Amino acid sequence: MAAAFWTRFRDGRGIWPAVPAFVFLTIFFIIPMAVLLSFGFTEIERGRIQDSGFTLRYLTGTLQDDLFWWVWWKSFYIGILSTLLCFLLAYPLAYLYSESGRTMRLLILVLTISPLLTSAIVRTYAWLVLLGGRRGVVNSTLIELGVISRPIRMLNTDFAVIVGMTQVHLPFMVLPLITVLAARDRNMEAASLGMGASRLATFFKIVLPLSTPGIVAGLTIVFALSYTNFIIPQLLGGGGFTTLAVQVYEQIVVVLNWSKGAMLALLLLGSCFVFILLIGLAGNRVMRWSQKEAA
Amino acid sequence: MIEANGVNKHFGSNHVLRDCTISVDTGEVVTLLGASGCGKTTLLRCIAGFETPDSGSLVLANQDVTRLPPNRRDVGFVFQNYALFPHMTVAENVAYGLKARKTAKETIRAEVDKVLDLVSLTEFARRYPKSLSGGQQQRVALARSLVLHPKVLLMDEAFNALDAKLRGAMQIELRKIVKHVGITAVCVTHDQAEALTISDRIAVMAEGRIQQFAAPDQIYDKPASAFVADFVGAANILPRKSAERFKTAHKSLNGSGALVIRPENFALSPSSQGGGVKGEVVFARLTGPAMEYEIALADGTILRALVDRDRQEPLAVGSTVEITIRNPDACVPLPGTA
Ligand SMILES: Nc1ncnc2c1ncn2[C@@H]1O[C@H](COP(=O)(O)OP(=O)(O)O)[C@@H](O)[C@H]1O
Ligand SMILES: [Mg+2]
Image (cartoon, rainbow over the protein chains, first blue to last red):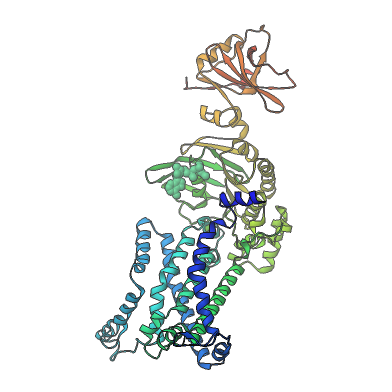
């Protein structure tokens, strides 16, 4: 028994290979996270736990607050819209990549990855310049061209936030899609075309469904990033603009109400997990053919 | 039904097909046989329309299709790995082409049932390809093509993914189904036994050229070149000088060039009486119903001989034998070679 245990340990079988990462994550992520979230169930004032008693006051208070639900809805729809926009932009790009020669592939890959080398905050500031008031690049161009006579309000709108998020998160959608599309079996398409299906039908019935793993990965990552991003909404949404993630930031850093902030963070995290789970389940449903059936 | 005339194809500087000309009659099963990389798949893909020849023409059912795309050629193509759609059930896979043609629902149901019955897969209709064995997947691929009643069925190494035992059975099965349907078929393989099993005629290919195009018995009995003789079945290819040694026993061994003698055409006698060629058994192997020997002649030439066990008791390695030819007329001279 002990010998078998030792052999497994030495040969790196079973769960052992995962142990170092698990220990690291437990110490530096799971425990601090648990401590932070536990603040949502205690009374804290001026950074000090007031009485160590357990309270559900913040949970019930938040869930009964109409403002919370309104903010939640805003986070949700901003997250969903920018994720979908990312998908619609990324899929054709990834498809183009999979159909291209070596030079074009390299170009697409470099253009996709290089934005990740600059800070997301810097890129968000760039949108301030582009979308900003009368002098903004977009407005001044449209006015010069005579398309509009007075500047349109673009900054400090949902539109600005969604555009900003889409741009910042696009690489995370493109990369998993590139992976599945470039590795796909071209004979499937040849077979479909050979049986008389059109190119369009072949795309929607063969290529698209078979890229489900990449789609699920991309949607999951980008939704999680968009739903929890608190910088872009603050910079591009303007003062009055708020999402759940922004609320967490404000409660903890500005208002210093750690209990409320922790509770909001818990709800943000929990709901994010639920959506990711739903995306995953939907993906599994589409992918049910990949499970082995009982013979 | 199919005519390929002087088809040439290059991939970059790689001249893959060189003046390939074959003509396939209606209802005939033809196999392109050759070593890996000789251009079989490329020729098949040209016929299917997945590749366009650089020069030469392709005629299907009296229509020049050289420039037509695959979907307008009325051919069925069975891919090397079958290319079944993994996210569709067997029935959906088979119905795919009919749906693309906007066939009526009831017709699709009836046709799919009929063809699944033909390939004995009725009970697997609702399963996904992943849960089927290799042989079953192959029959799905076949059914998926046959259901569209194409003029021509094209199959690329259709048995490669199957294990050896199943392969033989599936080849016979395929030949029966194809003959039952009466469809014209072109298959590709590197396995000579498979070619002999399934074909009415075989086109032996090497380096992008068709070496010989004839019925299986012709290919085996009258190989046109040393390559064909060696590739299809086992062969002893004796240079003319060695062949002359058999002349004392067999006056009728005429003709010029090297001589092809099949291993089963040798008779080995342990005693020395009949003016045959002397040799020593250097290797013996049981192949089942027959013994296979390697026999070294005095000049070092090694001959392979195959002797039915009910004709002769096995000979021991090291024993001296006298070799004669059983049927001198079955030896094939290859004029123009040494
Ligand atoms: N799409 C292609 N691009 C470049 N070279 C190819 C392509 N397809 C085949 N070839 C080359 O053509 C030759 C013949 O290939 P193929 O027809 O697949 O041979 P076979 O099927 O007889 O094994 C090989 O040398 C192969 O590398
Ligand atoms: Mg091939």
